[in-house]
Length: 236
Image (tube, rainbow, N blue to C red; front, top):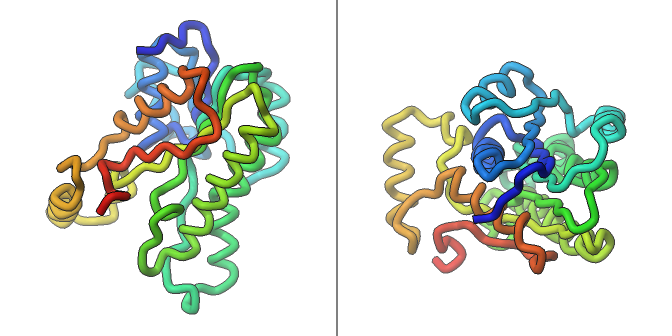
């Protein structure tokens, strides 16, 4: 188990799902954790769930907001970003506004954070992407492109930012609020079907991804990789 006693860790998108799981794991490992997101109410709720961590209202789609935040925050030991949404549909059915929005919701926020943040030498920056970047699915070509772009950015930054380490984590099916759009019974049946198709035989949990991210933060010899935390979904 890695110890992050006294280290400053920022989780952008830390109010729910994988971000919340990562922030919780880092807090339990002794880190000085701050969670950032657009909703103060959701940040308050997440902080209580974790046990009391710092909070920052931040819109990562806003150039000035990101620049101002990092000028005031000072250096961080580790930064994790896990945000983004939208972009599903056959490309011929998507208008350009929707396609631009998918990139604006994920790639450019990650770019802004990487550009503006100060990370201590030997620290780390971790992007959360998604399996579609490596294994496309029907009706998800735009999301595949967005995630692949993030993964390419992480590899390039691992060279440009050295010795600060930059990695990406690609989660598989994870039990997050993303699935709350389904009625409870339908969600349960959907989880069951996905688990049956995975070599691991189960859905992933946010904490599973959070522990993997902590490994990347703590291991000084890992940089420039895309780590699949997917229950074996790339194999089937």
